Figure 1 (cartoon, rainbow, N blue to C red):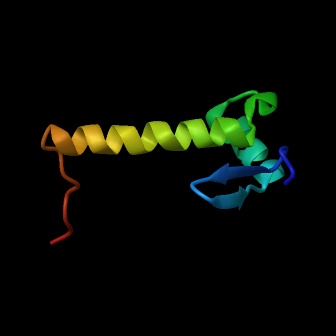
Figure 2: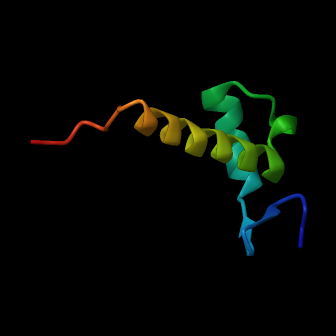
Length: 66
């Protein structure tokens, strides 16, 4: 497993296109490219999942298209 581009998650190995993600991080998010690692991406993903769970718990729901 290439630790520069891959991360193990729940029995799966996820391979990221690190070059593309770093370019996006620099241009759109203004994040230093050196911070973008598979572990960082996994941490951001876990934060997003936790936030969605919390929003559901407090009664927030996504607006439905009519």
